[in-house]
Length: 599
Image (cartoon, rainbow, N blue to C red):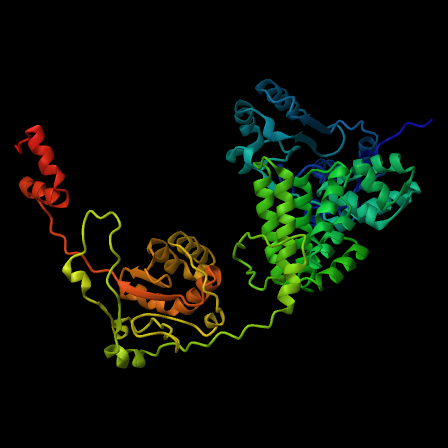
């Protein structure tokens, strides 16, 4: 029985032309060798398993070749190349800095640098995981690294360049190795499978490449594992069984159920996924990635960002055409929020199920925005009665178009003032409104800045600030409501306002709408004229929503502007005492009983 060699070692590249995924670096090194422009120190950095040490060995072999080829490759026939291929070359020294990171190890290396090569031109010192060297070892290495002998070349390899001292970086030529693409990994795995005589499916190799996450060594290790499991017949089903990977088909089925609003099927599918041993975190993360792939599949320019086989790519394109872009934006946002909240959630399953329900219900929403976080609301789930009632109901009349106010019109209408009612009575009863509060302030539209365009009140608006819309008049109910109901639905409306209305929403949170004695009139006190004009533009929509939420079609809203209080600062202590006694006469009795005197 012959000795078994893993694929990562057996098919390790021996020339620059066989290096996978690093064509730019390989070309640069070959040109430098051909031109004779070699640096004394190189730094190869990048993720694990992308070919840093492999390129360092090929580079060391090529510069010591006694008869290099015209294209910059080694001949593989001379004594130096044969010694390298048989791993007996004395010109290449490898040091693992993870286990040899002390000052003594570096001093031993410096002693070897002084000895010239016996065969070839250069002695190459490859220091792997160089970021593991201690600070003292780095400092001891600085002088030799900057001015080594002419026959010495250093190649430093690391996965964490940010941990290396800047003084080391400044003395090296830096080469950044990139991750392997899915296509490059699949092609290399296919060539290895053909050389070994294995049968394979392209989709199976694609799953292995995605699992490797850009590392060729990891891909070959997973490849050997799958070959042992499948007996040389590498199929998609056996790969996902061996690697415990969630199948593409689950996500395609889940999105189909969401588009058809089959919420029960979505929850049952998630239960099936949990039954196979998968956690909710990777599941929701995979769903977000699937929705992202659907999004990029809709456009021919971004479809190249989809890393999948041709068969899977076609399925993505077909399903993406049935998805609205706005729904994809909203669903991705919901999955991203769930992924962030999943780690801290106590009921993790419920967290994922709520996200699936919201994604399924968002397919009919047309107000989804690309950059706006969706309002997390839940509709009836397992009953179709509500949907049937909505389909049977007649379409509501379209909202009236409210023309914007022209600057000239606003100035001409400055004499037509909007009157307001007195401010609300203080509930605590500690003070009474002054006589000046009975005055009705006037809102002058012409005094506003010309750059601000406001909407005119509709035809149903009254002169004193009462606003009604034609859509709101369709509600004929007259269900009584309380002050608490009014406050609740007032803030419900504020939460539904868009981000463009943030300033007005902040003002509305400060306002305290008061229900009058007639049970249908709502008195709203605003701070100033500008806020009053902004409220006038919002009034038709506000009135419509309140009528709908409170089930009362006879609601009217009156605006009033708060009177500016002329407060005079009180500096004298006797005046302060007199002021507080006027507010609360019980202070006088308290002072007499305790025999207090003002000092």
